[in-house]
Image (cartoon, rainbow, N blue to C red; front, side, top):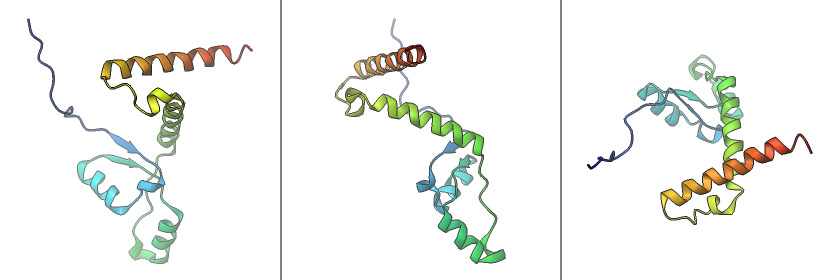
Length: 120
């Protein structure tokens, strides 16, 4: 029996995209809006000041969900902990199986460290 593997990326669309201020350009927001995806990107101070200087022609302030943005920070911290392990950060493992095994190993090390740290 042969199992056919899927080819290409999955045909799903995220409900929201969380990014930092570096991706707060008007073009990025317009692209996400066109695709029906919520942008969880804070506005840069200089962009906000420019919008306010324009007055009523400057448009509305950017809608920003702070709770969803906090979750982005949590995920980013986890990724940084994973990348602290050299094998994951530099992608030495060439096969997907060995890379995934390294991710599992590092995740279990982080989990055990978080369990032991409060006790000691």
